[in-house]
Image 1 (cartoon, rainbow, N blue to C red):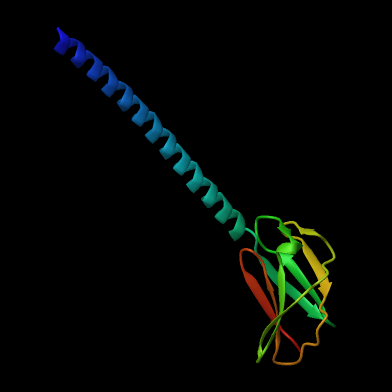
Image 2 (cartoon, rainbow, N blue to C red; image 1 turned 90 degrees about the vertical axis):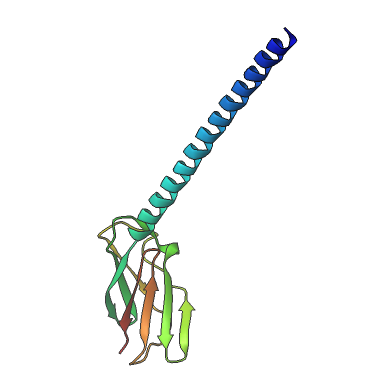
Length: 132
């Protein structure tokens, strides 16, 4: 009789452990799936934040959002590329946000000579244009 009661208690404990493990595994796999989905969405958004330099005249550079996502201009970086390396500089853009298909402009605060470049980077790509 004692063996039967011990067996019933053991089966009950094993059942509770099995259910607890199954619930934990289910939650863990759902969490992992959500994390992968969020990472994929972030990557899609980053790849959609693409720019193209459309003009550089008299130190004014015009950049167009050629992607599918809007871009905060604070996410753009600007560089003066010389034979000695890339020098980052601050650009004051005309607009704080660039919608897909729209452009914004800034005045480049550096002297850019022939053979050098102005480069603009966005989260999804970069573009460069020759000076002079």
